[in-house]
Image 1 (cartoon, rainbow, N blue to C red):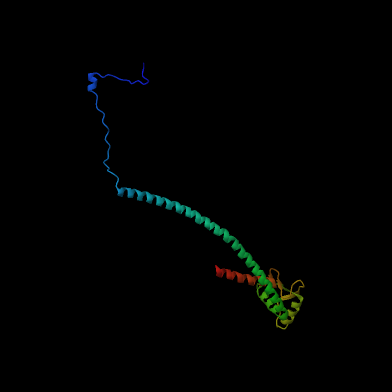
Image 2: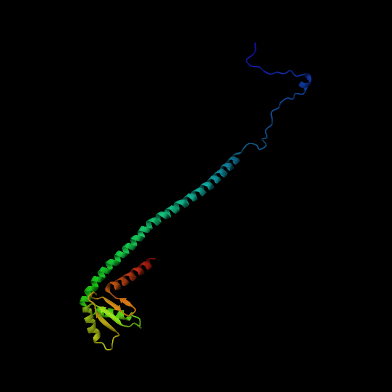
Length: 204
């Protein structure tokens, strides 16, 4: 009867038996000695420093992205505010013009001679070589200017043209090569725009 498991066996001769060597376990090189507490602490510190440096670098990179995003948010918020400031400034100019217009109209009614000063300033703004100068005024203002300036001596190199389309206090001067808009609206716009520009420069 055969066994369920079989072993290969070999009978050695006397010569072969003499050549057999006994197996010895290999030796382990443990010249490094056991790991000390100082070595463990040094390894931990090195790992901590490397992890800290890596984390700091990653944190800086992430913070730069956050700062850039925050700047974009501020820019997006400031643009509508800038537009609002400009729109508010235009509204203030219109309001100031409306108030000043009413005040000047009332003043012209009480002191219509002011239009004479307007005509003189407009004439002074003309080039010296201006020819065929025509001063367009409201008929009532035209009569007033004629009466006031008629008493002055000397001839004037310009003439008054009654223009019923022009409002009282307004003045348009037309020459061969130029035109001066001295209407009340134009004068108010120039004064108020200069005032607001000056305030804007002071803020900047």
